[in-house]
Length: 376
Ligand code: NAD
Ligand code: AHE
Ligand code: ZN
Image 1: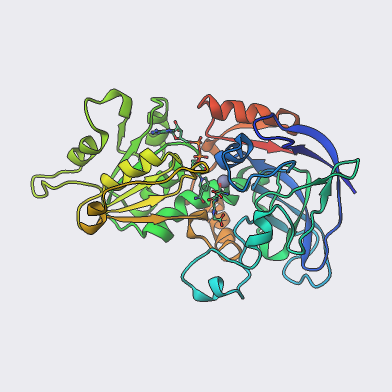
Image 2: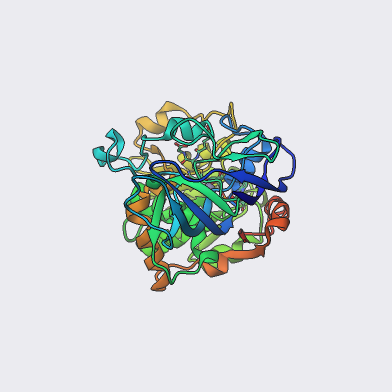
């Protein structure tokens, strides 16, 4: 069949809207009509050319929601008509990683996914002249129709609005999950969130849910102060407007008359900047502070700190998709949204058509959007 898609033809170039060929689902695969997709900073990261796994031409997008329209042989867990959220972190429930119960990073199809291919090593997308187009993060939600492995879709309730729950496909789950699953933040904690964008605001929302007392937001953009406060941030710091070092500033803010050492119980990097990652680690409390790396850094970038920071008890941890097991956890997060436990609507600042998708990247670059959502 043919479908409309925004194709990343080359790094650093705007996406091109075109008709493409899409083959039907093979064994163990499903075809999904994407109804809505968010634009995450990771899409921008790959489009910019900074992603070591970035390959072109490809159909980007990994934050979608839609309806199953066709299933391949052997598919048992979903059927046409089911509402689903594509999962860039699948959950096969059979691989050593899934069975370990120690990680959400299912390894069943990671190698072909990283090459932009379906598990059988081929692509379902091609240009009208036959040139193959690569998949992206196993999802390719910047296409009206896409094909995914059955293990990479979460079935969700049918009454949830696509243009909101698509955000659970990445940003919401990543932010809230990093707090609950990765850091396991406890009531009364002091936390610092670096980068108050589509991910950082969800970290703040997660911290509020977890009962954190002090939630410091750090961003270079002063407009993010009001945004952070809407979701529970208690203090805001713009590093470009303080005297001296940001780490010392944050450590001072967390001191009490009883605890003159200071430092956060938990910090979160939601910027992808390795200098910020260092600041986030070093702003942690001596002896127990944990810093969670969520941001994705460009090819070649490396994190640095004095090993003494770790010797003295600070912990560096990473979090992918908020540590969530997609097929199990995503339907529950959709329920949380429908029950009013978490907010999504205010963070969706722009609704665009597929033809307007490049505007979504411009808004992100200008710091004017939290999430832009493309509705098909
Ligand atoms: P975004 O563009 O919406 O937000 C980034 C925010 O960081 C902006 O508010 C910006 O002003 C701020 N910022 C930039 N540089 C800063 C600095 N030096 N100090 C303080 N603030 C700074 O991006 P997003 O969609 O929220 O994504 C954030 C990061 O998380 C990206 O690197 C993205 O690739 C990554 N990400 C990771 C996962 C994961 O599973 N680990 C999932 C989604 C996104
Ligand atoms: N391709 C990049 C890595 C990108 C990355 O770390 N992706 C996150 C999700 S970001 C979603 O917005 C992730 O889940 N990583 C785990 C994985 O297996 O990719 C690179 O640097 O090579
Ligand atoms: Zn994302």
